[in-house]
Length: 226
Length: 143
Image (tube, rainbow over all chains, first blue to last red; front, side, top):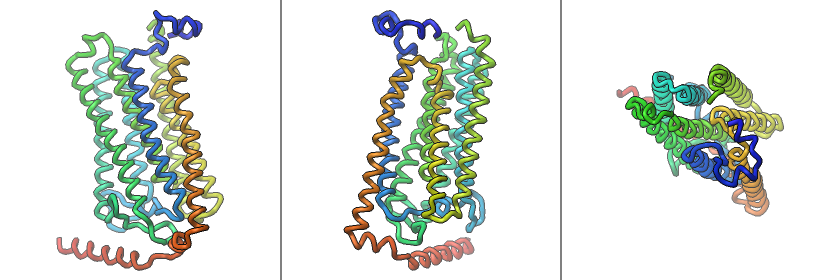
């Protein structure tokens, strides 16, 4: 790594060297994630544009105030979503640990950390499923918004449309991330990476998983906090 | 590869450090969020808190991309090929939010219906909601 950085730019691109110093698959994963960032960015900016062009907007502390197994009229804003956020952060940490263990060819640690990551992902999806189900029972869905604006005026369906579309798209990413991690786990257990002599595949799955966490940071802020 | 031995502890330390930073940032965000609940809707303070939350969000994004996704430790060519295109977002966000804001101003100025809608408080819906609430409760009792 240190030798590559000292090469002059002209030499870097004249062949025989890897100009990005990563393998093909990882570079392509980065490019894919960049394009995915633009997709999510377009969604969120569209949400922002609509929100800026409307006079009122529902209060997230009013909409997301419930908690599983809590009595009907409970008022616990931000509590459930903060749990979801921490689940995703922790699963991201275990993923880093799995990638790190992969560098050291430590199959056992890779396996345990991958399992924890998968559990975290499933836990997050379960939380989201509960929340969607709960909101749906309150009458919120694409095209129907039971909530009033913060100031008590009538709200449009933009709020629920954007909420379900964007969290749904993110949830779909989490779901595919869990599937990818399960495939990685199976490949690890089958000694595929030991035979290859490296765990670089885990790194690519890790990049994807961190990206999912990254997107949640934005979704969480845009929908629940501000 | 020769630096793995010394890198081992350093990497774990870095992961722990970044985890703590991300947790602290999230907790601060949540505290600000709770603080904002009872704040007046159109106060400047509320706007300032929202701005702070956005800055904290960017900090979290930086730590996730830089350390968890390891971009900070890649060589400059790779960093540039990812970060430079993302600068498009600066224009993207400013232009579109400005556009949305301008559309609202125009409608408030020239569309009396739009303006009126945002001043009428809805009470019927609240009652409907309450009725629904009662329905649910009776349903639960039936169960």
